[in-house]
Image (tube, rainbow, N blue to C red):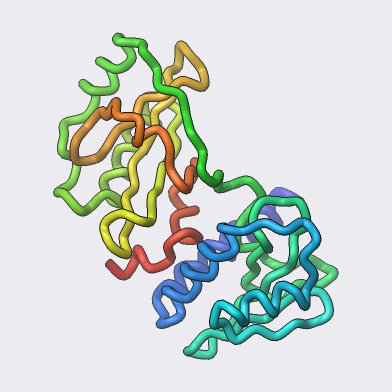
Length: 226
């Protein structure tokens, strides 16, 4: 029964993000997520959070246990202070209730400012290079290309992580993947969907890192409009 409820929550999360990304509030959701991801305050209260959001231009209203943010098109999001957890607050698609709301972001699903160690395993790097013909997609289509790369390498039973830097390529940002060395756990090789295997240091650190492609919706809902 709990497994069914979990699947339902995940489905509702994805549905919420897909729907809202097609509205004019998509950019505002993206900006709000980036804002709360850039700060942490273990002692922040509901009133503090509402005031903080208001000073950043959001129409925010403190409720008993959460803050309601109303976007320019009337869509709403709900935030709750999260204490010592990462980010300033948790973001929800429905008003939090004692029975449990639908959470937009699952805890620790997205790592912030993570750095990963590069593998020196030449055989593994050679295999990763040979399993794909580059470029996978034209320059500028890193979302589609990274998803295709991840699907391909996962079909060879490799573990894959997405790396995302929103500061590149205007609103789109840049997305690439890391492939874990199966013989040397926690060591990785970076792969760009256009350029192929990358060894430059900047490819092993990023503002956002996550394992599921669906988490890109939470970081940048606007990507589906591109």
